Length: 287
Image 1 (cartoon, one colour):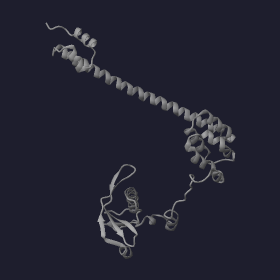
Image 2 (cartoon, helix red, strand yellow):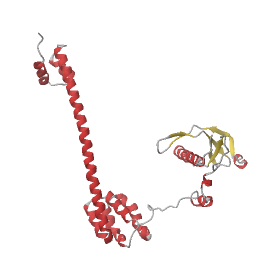
Image 3 (cartoon, one colour):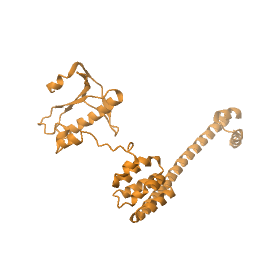
Image 4 (cartoon, helix red, strand yellow):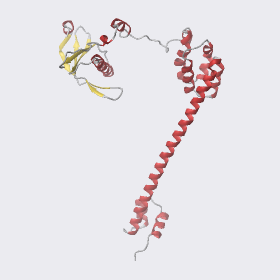
């Protein structure tokens, strides 16, 4: 461990944690050892992650990065304060010399670009804060941004009525995706007609083609749901019939073998007196 980092650690606070992580795929994983330690100079808390590898592999930094992300997510959910540092230690004990990369930056051809533009932060396009007037100035991408900003209300007819003129400005590279998105979210006839009215003539056939495809998919989905519902109802009906047959068998046994009265059988089985009387008539008298 670098000496300057070691000097920042309050080693009296060093303790082993019990950290485990669940990936998005549902896979449960444990890092080998995770220590927490408090940093001096009011720098906050840090984690030291030790991972043991017995074979040399090129993706070791990615495995460590996966644990780091899960650890950071867990920390943010459980703690109020932000985490100051995660320090990784790879414990390698393979028979062959380690030939993989040591850090995630080493996996890239241009680490300086990654450090500056990937680790340096994301470019935020804040549609929630931007006004429609500002978004319109983005020209070619303006309609896509308005779809994402205003479309969450679900009224695409209103959106098209107000900003549909943007669709007539040349050829938008995302036109097919935009049409598909609109019709998937709002399949009303008035929205389709408004879309055909405003769209550049070369896209009218595309609008109709997508609308027809969605209708066909909707019908097919409805048919499949109907088949599944029919199968489920059939299973339930068969189950009910089986239970009713079993109840009748129990009632016959109570009548014929146990010689119980109708009132007792009715209370035990839930059958009506009429049904039990029919069973009594159908049971042969002993010889």
